[in-house]
Length: 368
Image 1 (cartoon, helix red, strand yellow):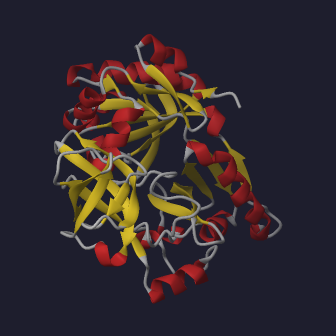
Image 2 (image 1 turned 180 degrees about the vertical axis):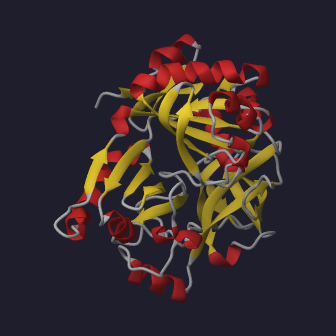
């Protein structure tokens, strides 16, 4: 299968980006170095092109009921301009995808899904849609993924850098809210106080034909604040320091959302796909947990490295791991038996047949 390109592919190549395959797309992994880009976002401001992400629009009187059926969080608490983190449970105890739910109006929502799961999510949601016709009006689903670009402008200086481009008051926007507003001379741009770095900032949704103009405007407005383009390499270290799961690594079709720490977005106040089974799992208690750990011995944990007890007994494996640029040590996530999940518990990572000592820590690794 041939790889797709984001609309600004030529822009990234001209900026010297190293391009790699990711989630079915050719994506910039870095422009300078992962360390430099990571620190730029943590300390100033950077811009990611994450236009590979998927966006679905759901419209109609039954749109909310459909979302309530397929997602585990309670979308009925949303109001216009509010965003919610949620996930799509499958019917066998795992997770189809994690996603964001945007309430545009009472009868219109936008779902933002992971690039690798666009087709899977689309087909899953559509199979339930016919159940939610209201007064003869079906839920109207539109996959706008190929028509939209998404830029994540992240870092403590993001609001200052972007403010000249919009009348929306960015500094006063609450976390997980959004506005449809003017931006860089374009109308009806979605500016969302969300992100995947833990560094604060905004995500900007624009049509493909607006993308290059908006990208250039952001780079120009951000220049006095040291803005730089940022690739997937730094995105991964930033999200891991903040304890954010990556679909395909830390959560999958096979992982229990409760074991993955998604109990906080699993609301049994409504019936959703597989809710009875998950409720029973919660009541019985979970057998294993997704934990964060930091290295005590020197070493970098990588995905699929074994997690062990002191005597070498294998108890799990690393799902995500890296050298934390901010903390200056190895950090990771992985599943272990619940009995070994308490912060302070000593575990070991098998690195090249050596057992390196680590400690279970409370997520996120980077405290605000």
